[in-house]
Length: 196
Image 1 (cartoon, rainbow, N blue to C red):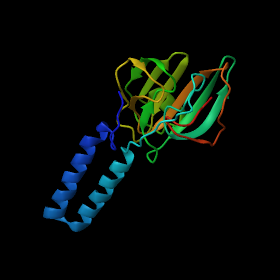
Image 2: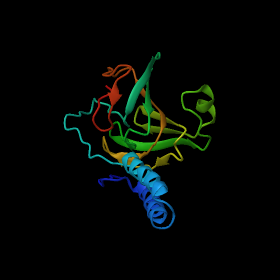
Image 3: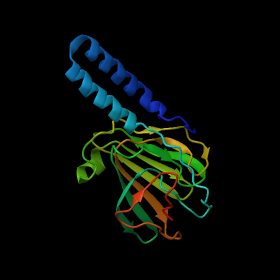
Image 4: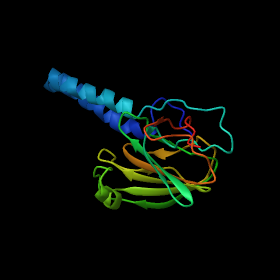
């Protein structure tokens, strides 16, 4: 499912509600409250923005970042790398396929919205496990993530939209036969940054 609009469709309802509340407050209640509601509306537009992203130099050997964020850790295991990407509300939130292949949802669990940096969050928060070929993506929701939105399972092209994830931790598991192209502290952009 490609979403080529300026705003993600998942943002239409919250933005529309915020606009109606802003107008109601401005007309019937208070300019001050209306101004606060307007700031919230603008913030929602920023959260649900959908920049057009495409990288023309992606090859079949590349794995791109599935989401915008900052690399907080890289675990090197016996057979794979685990790349930890922190996603905050100032990032864009469209999940994209890191490689081409069959997109599968292995597990989707509803849970709490604790701070994703804590150990308890890794056990109790809403989570999803996705797989495309030999790449696994684990999503752990954060404080501001109301829901993990995933689109239908199907064959996807690299960079194609597979869902929306507002806030939390994204763990990308990549086999060690790939060569890493990132370091801790790097900012990554979905559809553009090559992880390997």
